[in-house]
Image 1 (cartoon, rainbow, N blue to C red):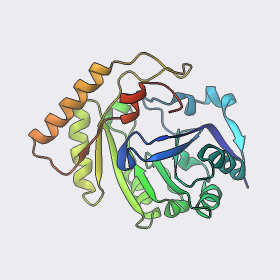
Image 2: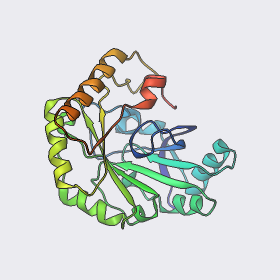
Image 3: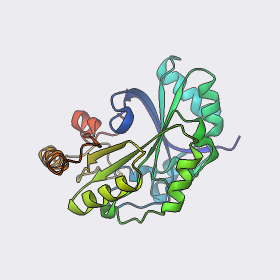
Image 4: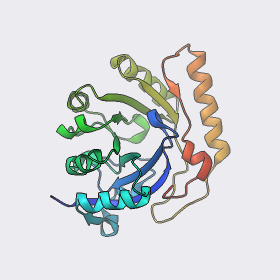
Length: 239
């Protein structure tokens, strides 16, 4: 089995955002990404200058770490990054599902893989204009198709009015996908630091603005969530 590039494995903690917020989870963070979002909060798993900190691990080694962290008790495993879709996680998912573990993955929807159909939940997070990236909607559609009707949802980070208007347009394009909105963290940690100061008042102000904006427009279909892990632990890494 081909080794996986792993930036970190940690937990159990709780999932901090999206469709499975609050769920006890072990995180497997993959190294490498095909995007370079301006506000990325996990550059240590994205930028190639940190590749020497990533570890090449076989799927068996990754799963052994997950089992050790969870004490052998099955729980949710979150595949994150970076963009985990650029690697082959099929063998890891097969190993985990055989022992009762479930797998959730978040990706921007730029690369489709057949193994998406083995996930319990696929979270597609198309990046809004503030990211500096442009979504290829044909590739995004291919990711939806690859999931083969497994639970697939969208999560969109909103920083400003432009992002908000963009999110409304995306929601209209994909009305069948449950949508989760969350305010962006405008004070992400520097990649070299374990944690950093955080503007909690600013984050909460943006969250309140997003709630007021969405409800004021009578747009009642999205679920509007904070980044729960940021509220509890700030920018501390590995929780």
